[in-house]
Length: 207
Length: 207
DNA sequence: TGATATACTACTCATTTGAGTAGTAATGGT
DNA sequence: ACCATTACTACTCAAATGAGTAGTATATCA
Image 1 (cartoon, rainbow over the protein chains, first blue to last red):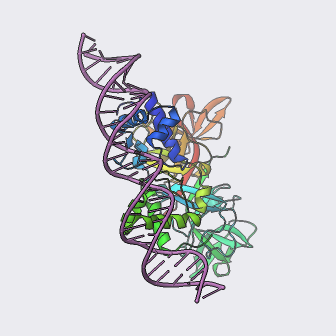
Image 2: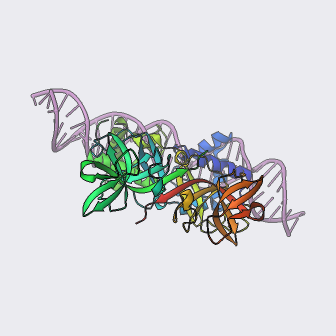
Image 3: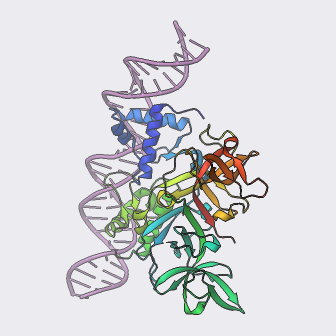
């Protein structure tokens, strides 16, 4: 692919920035205004060039149908928005989206599964799950609903607080193995509310 | 917020799907066509209702300027696209985007830093970094360029292959601590090419 | 029983918008 | 010297588009 001229690069950046900011794709007129062109033809010319160089795509005759073509964009998969809760209150499953404290957006391919309405995220506090390589500050993505299999990491509600535990079976009876010294090693799973099964994890490097 | 009627929900879903699929925001006419309405006014009416209920936003007079308002969308931060390499060839830094094998898209807030052109991702193979809680199959996000600090996890090029190592200093001299039995424990850092410093990690649960 | 919201059809209308014609000027390659 | 490309101005034009008027029908609620 041919290199873009500085002017073309600026216009491409502008379009990309507008889309990223959640605004509508700019029209010819808006591009002209932004760069101080007196004629919107100038913008159209640059768009033509960008299209010819393969950096842009648009459906002819359709307003604001510009699409930035980047080598990465071709590889990008669908992005899922997962609500991040500070602490999950007792009656979780009923409401759809109880006040989310944040939003975790990750593409479905990296996540490894397609999130549903029952997918949520929690920020891990404490190193109680370090034995399963889950660290303090990690964001864990959990799925509410499915029956956990033995060995799965689950989030359980204990004393009004979400805690990560390992789900196990002993003589067919489900147990939760706490890796936190504050709790006994094995807790009967029936008495506790399992909020979700571990599906994915995001970690940022400590500063 | 008032609940949406089934018809309104269908239209909202359609708009969201079109945007997610990378196509342009649908016009009134396109919505009408899709649902078989004879008049585009019907579509406009539904959009009005959705706007009134706070589920949509648009700039008046602007073509295709619809924006879906969801509680999560408000919390969503900018999404970064990071190239995922299968294996990083020797001359990395020179080209901008050498054939990426995939694309990792994560929001900047969850990532903990704003990626640059020097940010890339690798899929971890083997459990050699299990001591630092990095597992086989994890995706690590690295930043090329900055001088690593002692204790940082870095990706180094050894025998034409990227390997994760711990960066250390001994008497002021930089060393790489291999956690892989195939390599000696300490390797002089100067002789190896450090490709990037660990910044973030994404893990999917094993099936 | 009347008000209100929903869910449409069939129109009109002013703007927005992409696309195009014609022309100017500068730059760089051959 | 000639051509292609870039980078614009100043227009025109038709199609796309949002917004609106008028009207019909069917629910739901008080």
